Image 1 (cartoon, rainbow, N blue to C red):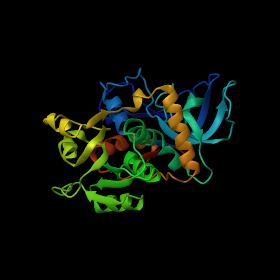
Image 2 (image 1 turned 120 degrees about the vertical axis):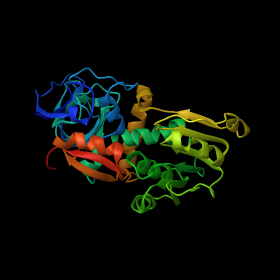
Image 3 (image 1 turned 90 degrees about the vertical axis):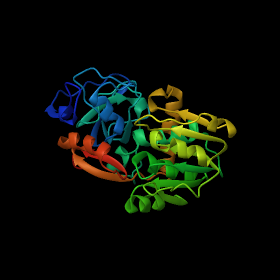
Length: 321
């Protein structure tokens, strides 16, 4: 089968399209014929080497998100059958990597994809949806009627976070960096959309109960000014350091909470996937697709997800749907 493989860490060019042996399926695993795979920012950190949460054994096929049809099934797998349409969310599962024509992963890493959803939409679910869910509900404890500010709301995680928060009954403020991105965030249900490239774009915002922070090194000090008493700030992303006065957290008794999908406990992760599956069935979640690349251009996709302003989820198209 065709796959993207890296034999060493480094720049995007270490990602090479190769022919490789089809993986074997164990008793609790499934093989999924993939149509699309999702590309996530942390996969670029893994590729570069030195990522704190995950260091693969080389050679390595990247990728944790995808969507396709079950082609083979282990003898102890229940609830699935050959031919089922599924999405793959394999962050916590032993996996052969989704940047490939086929992936083998644990049956606990897949859920059924509704018939009305495309495989492209299915490939945009895994990491973004599990990240958004954990940030909003498991770390952020978002309640009905609260006000939530979602930075970077036009990205893959942000779009789904907006949809989940609106479904919860929250008042949602989203930020984006372009007119196109702002329009997409508004279309996704945000009550108010701000351009984070404008100076003092948060000057009229106050009493926010929960902030989902995608770039803490740039935004955290401003977040502390607009957060409500007893408010929570969940740090999803960060690319640098900053200085701030911790006393600012005391006056309002603010919680600053870090999170990473790698720290999901198994039971919590399964609950998260179950809830995501329900929201898909109820048409609460509609993943927004960004730019799509052919499999052989995985290196360009990984470059662009860091260096360009992505709107929606970046995908690799593996084979025609």
